[in-house]
Amino acid sequence: MRRAFLGEFEEIVLLVVAACSDEAYGVTIWEEVQQQTGRSITMSAVHATLYRLEEKGYLASSMGGATAERGGRRKRFFTLTALGVRALNDIQEMRNRLWEAIPPGKFQLIGG
Image (cartoon, helix red, strand yellow):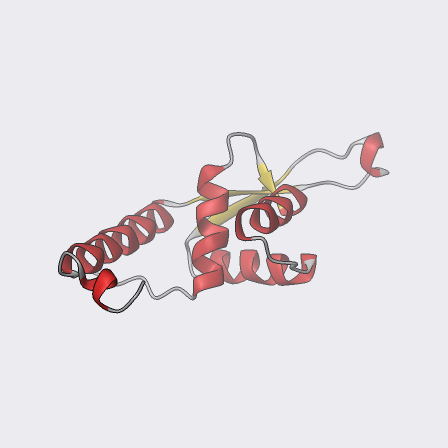
């Protein structure tokens, strides 16, 4: 089985796409990433990450219809692929194992 090697920002963007209850496109993803992380992020960073995740097979995209609201421009909508879902599940399982491996009281010993 192919292991998922995602950077932290790639993982966040993938999680935001997964969490979107409506259709996920650049602006909604960009806004949600900033809201969830408290970081100031450029739209181009989000777009570059979305296209990289699509190239890796974790996301798929399709073009929506042109709207007058957007001056006739179309939106590109992103959805998780089966590989993207598997990657997120693998990451969550690995993180859960690591958290469960921390001995009880460890953080109190080091002042955390």
